Length: 108
Length: 116
Image (cartoon, rainbow over all chains, first blue to last red; front, side, top):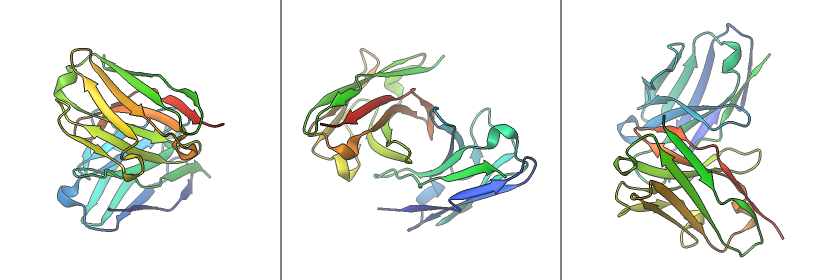
């Protein structure tokens, strides 16, 4: 089973700053089958990125994904107030489809 | 408008059973893989099970294998999760989600609480 480890656990930043979130896999993720989700309190998650770097429809271009193999990154270029939330990476393509433990982006 | 609406959650005793349903609308249900994903209180997301378009392929996380069964009825646009031998660590909000290169639509979630 591929384990996804996200870091940091919590990221304290101010609006307008750049956020860099990491997702490291215990084994190589084939075909870059890696997605990123945002979750706000009391809401279902929302997909941001799939295929490691493709933005989902309707997602602002301040969100970008990069990486391959075992190291992946979600970057938010300039944090907006609505971006303070939990973020999860997910590996898919073959069972089990695991999630990382999450990174909380909080207002500094 | 795509909608996924879960139902069937509630309080159940350890060792008990429960069946979750997810009613889908606004898209051709039979064209998509579907999944159940759960989230324990204050915890992260955990993938539970997948089912392919016609229900012939099913995959489960190890912790629920032999206890949970995912199924679908394409004539009723519905997804199901039959849960047996429930344990305290099964307590969570259970989401149904549509798979389309990622989970692009989610339900609002159904809370399952396993407690004496």
